[in-house]
Length: 389
View 1 (cartoon, helix red, strand yellow):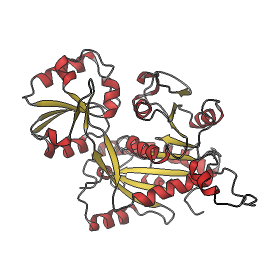
View 2 (view 1 turned 60 degrees about the horizontal axis):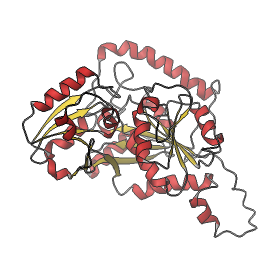
View 3 (view 1 turned 120 degrees about the vertical axis):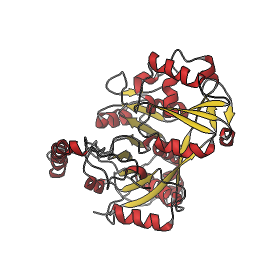
View 4 (view 1 turned 90 degrees about the vertical axis):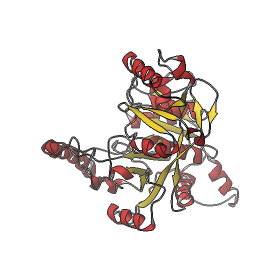
């Protein structure tokens, strides 16, 4: 059921009022122009959420990478949460996870030809990517988790909302998990309800669409999670999903919302036991000892399943037993658009990049059909939005 993972701490509601006033004042300063938002010539697509963690930002950014990487030069700019470095940092093949954070590290490992950079100051990060000699061929920049970073005005602002934590039922921090009021969803050009169950009915879509109460300039999409074949973290073995049917699973996660993963895996295995740690958790020696013991006590046949994000940290964790290493598998996830919306979404993104990037295959392919002496004035890069002002 939608909103079924929401827990409200009613006794903290007075603190939420104070927090809401502070956040509201900041947003008002941007609306009045007291605080300035900057637009950039290079196309910028922001992916973020209003709630604290767990809406599926990374798999949606990865979807955009797959959509664009063969057509344009893509750069991903992230804050690099909990990294041990400061300022702007461009990742290369040798950059350790501690220097850029687990999610940027994951994307760099998966997409070698994509620029991945981190900077808390997104405006400076965009400037560095577009002016640096190494990365100045960047055609489009994907901002990871930047809905609240209003100093940048993206050309496309994508807001993700977890189906199980719908913002219409949630409250502001610290009583709930909202970073800002749900009305701020009006800043989004595209709203995606993520982690939807596969068995949603037509009436469910209609109810959700009405409940979101979006403006005419906003587009609403629905996505669900797709699980890929499991990969051995400390080896080369690959397991099909149906190989879990007779196994007892120890699910090891350090992510914001592991509940959906538990729900999805439960019918695919014999039993499932969960060891859930906080988001971006760094596994300590005590944690490693507990993991080793928990897996040792699990009845065979057994397997440990973890996320791609956790794998970036576990790979460098010392003390894991040989039994754990041998049976530790990564479960990759991808997002899938529902209601046959994939083509519509893709075209919106590609159209935006096509109109704003002069170095892309998309533009070159289109321009080949134009007269040589065309007086078209649309050749200047510009930042536009789907929003009709």
